[in-house]
Every structure is written in structure tokens, then in C-alpha cells.
Image (tube, rainbow, N blue to C red; front, side, top):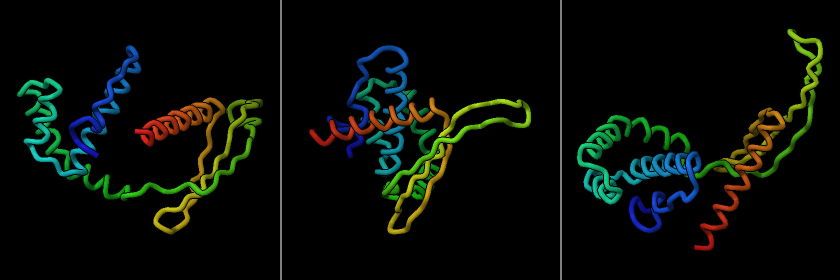
Length: 156
């Protein structure tokens, strides 16, 4: 992936308004920072990319100082993630209800127990979590968005 150029993470601009635009900007900024760390970008590369975005020299200096300050920490974080995220082999779930708790006699709140059977570099690992109906709907929506992005990227 490029740090600058037509296929760079920052080349796609949000055409929606307000919150969508801010969220897209946040994603682009985060991707730019992580790619700069991953590619071990030097000051001239970062400067030229930020100049293309019409950053002032003062803002570029502030950005670069912060980048250098946190670079080692981000490198450690990226190294701990590894090159490949875990591959999901299977998903299982069950619906449960909180009938009551210590504070209230009747809760009657449904929640889902999700188990992801994953494999990371040949070793199996289970990831278990619980979520409410709303949280699960949000997760499904985000997964659908991710699938659309992958489909778009594969068509380029």
C-alpha cells in the first residue's frame, strides 16, 4: 500500500456530510499514521504527503514531532498484532436471557453469547464475547460494510 498517491488510504474523500465526513477523516488519519509507521516513512515522505493535503509547515512539524514521539510504541503495537489477523473458521452463538439480577427481581433482557473459532499462524484460538441485540445488529452492519469495501477493493 502506498503512503501517497491514487491508491493511498487518504485518497478517498467522504462525500457525505457531518458525522460521516468526520468518521472518514478519522479513519484516513489513522490509516495514514499506521502506514507511515509500517513503511518506516522518513520526514521528507511524510512532509510531501501532508503538503499535498495543504498542511502548513507548522502543522507538519507538530505532526512529525508527535509521530516520532509515538513511533516506537506504534511499532510495538503493530508487531504484537502480527502480519496476518486471525482467520475465522467458524462462528457459533446462543441466545440467553437475564431473568433477574441482584438489584432487580425481573430483568428479562436477551443477550447473545458469540464464539468465534479462529486460527492464527496455524494455532487455533477461540474468541468468546457477549452482546445485546443492538450491539449484535451494529456488529452485523459493520461486517456488511467491511464486506462491501473488500468487494470494491477487489474490483479495482
